[in-house]
Every structure is written in C-alpha cells, then in structure tokens.
Length: 230
Length: 230
DNA sequence: TTGCAATTCAAACAGTTGTATGAAACTATC
DNA sequence: GATAGTTTCATACAACTGTTTGAATTGCAA
Image (cartoon, rainbow over all chains, first blue to last red; front, side, top):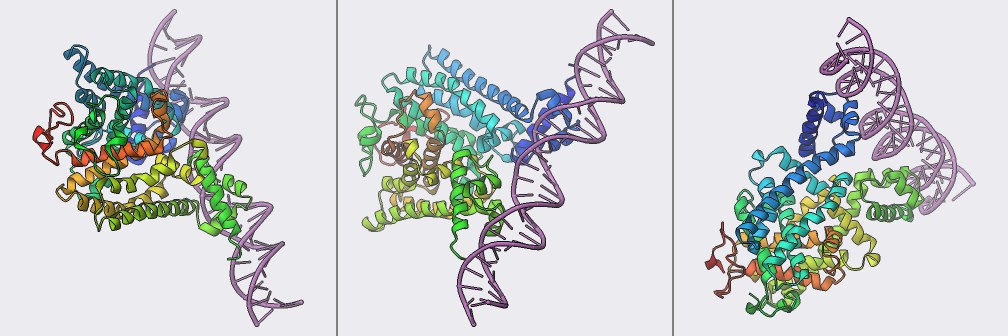
C-alpha cells in the first residue's frame, strides 16, 4: 500500500483533466503527464482506463447521494416521518444544483467533473447511472408519504420533471444565459432551486381536489388551463 | 454529380449506424462497409468525418425547426398574430416528442439518430446546436406576445423548463419506465406532450391572475417566490 | 543485511483511427 | 471514339490509442 501517493495523484489529475476538457479528448498519457507518474501506473492501480473513470464517478455519486439522503432524513425526522413535498424536492435537486451552478470560477473540480459526466455520458459512467434507480426510489417513497392521495404515476412524473429541470439547467446554463441575454441569473443558485422546486410542486399538486383525475389532459384543453386546477 | 448514389448511401448508412450504436464506436470503416462503398468515398464527398456528422445533424435540425415554426405560424395566423401560450409550447415540444417517443420498434432512423445526438453530444453537433439560439428566440417572442404581462426572465425560464422536460423525457425514457415499473406510459405520446405543456403553462402563469389558490404548500420557504406572487 | 513483495519505469505491442495518394474506372461531351 | 472531368478503388500512411512486459527500484520485515 505504501503511501498511495501515485494512486491519488492519478485520481486528482484525471478528475481535473476530465473536468476541463471532457472525456472525449483526454488520454491516459495526458493524465500521467499531469500527475507526474508513469504510464503503466494507471493500469497497475486501476486495471483499466474505464475502471479509473468509474471509480471517479462512483466516489462523487456516493457523496452526492449521501448528501441528498441526509437532507431528506433530517426533514422526515423533524416532521415525524413525513416531510413536506417541497422540502423533499429540495433535498433531491438542491445538492446537485448547489454544487454545479454558481459563479463558474469558483466551481470545484468535483462539480465540474460531474457536469461533464452529465453532459457527455461515456459508457462506464452510464453503467453506474443505471444503478441509481434504487436511490431515486427512496425519494419516490418519501414523496408518496407527503402526497398520499396522488397516484404513483403522478409521483414518478413529478420526480422525473424535477430532475429534468435541474439537470437541464446544469447542462444548458450557458445557453440559457446567452438566450436570455443575461436576464436569467444563473449565479443565483438559491433562486434557481426555488424555481425548480416550485414548478415541480405545481406539477405534483395540480388538480388535487378532484382525486384521481389526470391533471395533464383536462388541464389543457387546447386552451388555457383552468383556475380550479390549482 | 452523376447519380449521387454513393453520397446518399453514405448518409443513410451513417445515420443508421449512429442511431443504433451511438457516435462513440462507429468508425468510417463501419460506415463504408454498411454502405457498400469505398473508404475514400467519405472524404471525397464530405471532406471529413466531422463534416459528415454535421451534415446529418443539420439536415434533421432544419427539418425539425421547420416543423416547429410551421405549427407556430399557423397558430399565430389563426389567432390574428397571437397564439395561446399552450399552443405555442405545443409547437415547440410537440414535434420532438412526437418523433422521438412512442413504441420503440416503430421509431424512424432519423428520430433515433436525433435521440443519440441529444444524449452523446459530440463536438461537430455541439457546434451546430449553439446556432439554434436564433430559432428559440422566435418562440420566446411568440410567448411574449401571448403573455404580455410576464417579464422576459419568466418567459425564458418557462421556455427553458419546457425544453428541459421534453428533452429529459426523451433521454431518460428508459430509466423512467424502469423506475416507475411501467406505470408511466411512455408510449402515450399525446399524454406526455399534454403533461409537459401543462406544467410549462403553470410555470409561466403562476401568480398571473389574482386567483388566491396557492399552487403548492408554503411552496418555497427560502422563497424568492412569495405567497403574493400567486 | 538479506529476502521478498510492492511499486515504478522505459519500452514495446497490437490495434485502431481518420486521412491522403495515385492509378483505374467510369461518364458525358465534342 | 478520343478527351476531359468526375468518381471509385486498393493501398499506404502517420499518428494515436489502451494495454502489456520484464527489468529496475523501492520499502519493509525478519
């Protein structure tokens, strides 16, 4: 085991390079040069390039999921096993948005790496993402407890849309800034989280009164959505 | 010019292979084998591999944008220069969702290619996507006409979220199916479009009228969005 | 110190990649 | 039917990829 110096130098260098230039054009030789280690060290310590990438992503994913679940658990305990829906959603999208948005120059390497992983989606990472479903199920369960009269289908769509808005904002933050001529303030992370949560809550609670009526179809009848839906 | 047979055979083969296996592991040799043409034909007809990819994507993008704008224009003409917001949003996300969702086995090659392009995002495609802003601006303008009392910022966020939900649904349709154990019907394209449009309209019109109904619960605590906004 | 395992190293390997070349095969025009 | 221009073809190229090898070095325990 020695000091693990080489191993961690490789991890750090790889994460930095991937964060800066993407997975597409970073070679093992780039990494070992940045880390000042020998080319063979990567295969010696990690087995293969893909396993190196996987280890990087797994580490960051675990940290993110732990953060999410800690927020969720704290909220549910405080509420006696049931947290308000907006707090649940905040626990879901807050950590990601908080880490990946905000002033670009003060974004951590880890955050920039995760942004890349979200945009480029290379095979070893995709394989890991597929195991994320169990984690999301825990949030679906919490949401079900918060909104007991909503159908499972509605819960899943709400969860799905919340993630959609969060991830798409991260992926396309640059484009949104350009499109809006800077009128959308992408540095106001708290405001963005509020926005995403608020819209998600609307999606989940629209048409609540009339029980199981699917809100989507009747809500929009080729015209405006009716006020009673709120 | 002759018959262009080689040229179009390359285009067709490339689109098919990219749609099936992604950009990552399709080589020029795979393409020319599929197209039954010589290896050098690609560089002869397109200049480079990237230019081939670019031509494929540009073609499909133009078609999509044309379809969107036709729907928008028709709606605005019918309404005397002003279309209802939900119809505008439907023109924005409808064509994409209609093309890319629905029973997987009856999805066109073009649609599957565009899904890949949306997921993998390789350099030549990203360069083209950056020019899509002008197109989106036309929708922002139409939305502004439909909702004259909403600020530009709100318009852009609404547009952004609509695209977020549409694209994320396309990208992650498989995961949503698995997560929801099939309870979310990804083959009901019309229903999905209704859902996306309905939520987007809510996001755009929340707090518009003085309807007392709170959309969520104390929706947002850290709240930029205060109760009076709704 | 000796012995032994863990680690580092330079070098080579085996394969793939996109691209370039120059001759051959076409096609249409005169 | 010769000619000029276009298109196809087999082949070579040069660069780069992740991985492997086997020897050198290191660090630690006996």
